[in-house]
Length: 486
Image (cartoon, rainbow, N blue to C red; front, side):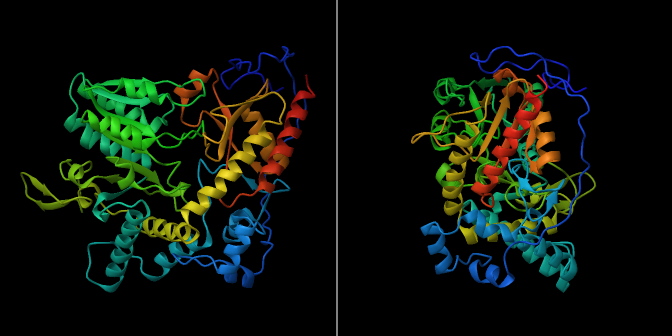
């Protein structure tokens, strides 16, 4: 028997709507769980149609397709889906509906081919050889850095440091800049909606330096209270760590304003842009942030690589994060001298193929246009929120969209008396719908909301209104199934 009224530790979930009568604890006897199966379906589009309607790299859509999108004849999701082979398959006997993009995005064929081409044609270590393969690999690796810099409008590619992921990028700042610049009683301001990777490193640094962490709570709209944040900033503030887009609430913070407030007292700002860089135009010079991190795998690139943007004047003053090959200038028996950034922070053999794949992903996204992606996703975001509101006994977290309030294309939610993991499991096994359940690496936020976990549906530009419709119908079927045991 599965008790859907409790979390994994057996704790009861919060009751979400005061207008809902208390219901009896549901039971589930004899639920048949289907084993996964993965037959592939052929994309419903001819190769000639695909090649004639969309071109990769920095080239634009053809005029006819751009006109079709603008006139509403075809959506961006319908246009780009053929480029993602993984989307054209059945899961557990149903057509896959992938709505877990805040956890990771899918990869277009162009990215997959770039990885294959690297390993088949010029696999070699970078910066360490004069032969053709090494020179070719080095050129492509450094070209990827330039592509990242251009994508976020950094003033120089030397401001881009490749890391394993955004988590490592934040740790780099924490251990290199934080341990060198923070002292007892210095204050670091964060919000309670930060990802664990933006909290835990600063907890460790605070323990080592005596710095103090201060957290901003949510306002009445379930958005981090930026006015309280502004009031909290003082001459004791040395660093502000904030997300650009919340991976749970879908809210968007005014980074430009936060940076102005922080810089007015001499504080630095680190922006977690993992949920913004893949979905909107991000201009680091316009934001004027001191540090910004993002992850390749959320922006249609490979796993295993992310990047740190840091202003040149800051990177130059920061000591190495890791020691070893590549990050040195000279090594003696009693001391070493270090390379200039970004090499100073890239010890050892880097993720070469992954960097090249990230460059290919940026080519792909730039070929579409980030503003076009953002505009389309805003339409999908509103559609998702509106349709979710039709589900009985649902509680959606974060702000309600309006003319003045824009949500990202994701919704975290709970449904009265049904555990989110049960929802996600049933959607997957009975309908082929992939969503996420859990605390989404945001336990402090979930505790503030009074729950241990939530379900989350998150979209990308290759999703469609049809995907949302299938999800909503499947979710309603899921709710009906669990309610039948009450």
